[in-house]
Length: 132
Image 1 (cartoon, rainbow, N blue to C red):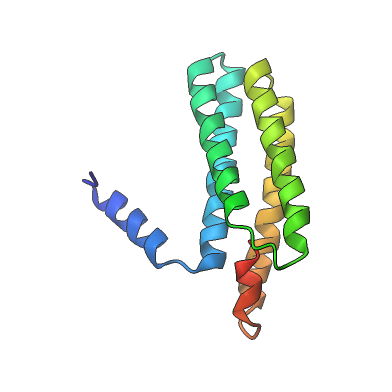
Image 2: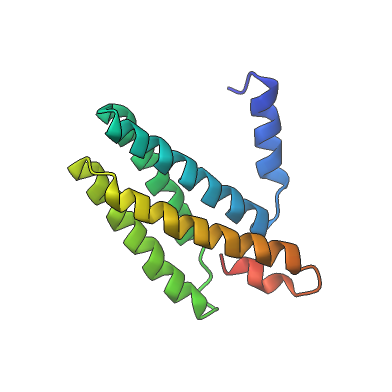
């Protein structure tokens, strides 16, 4: 149940966002949860790390589920997402932040690409947003 005004605002933001904005929000969430997991590993708070690794993995799985394979780039994104999932799982199992830090680097690069696409794409067709 949603109680706070912030939670209501957050839910409204997600429900009214377009495909590009949702993708950006997913990347930001995955980055946030991975950073929390890394900090938790470093602080030996393994339950917190596990929970946040799982959240980041769920977001990446959502990104995979949203791929539109009518576009060739989707196959490349799938391989990147699968690699990031592998790294997050290994970081979680080994309680080692190194591979998770690599995931953040990849996520940040993809986030920047989507932001550029979102900002510069006013005159293009909607089909690129369907690629996720």
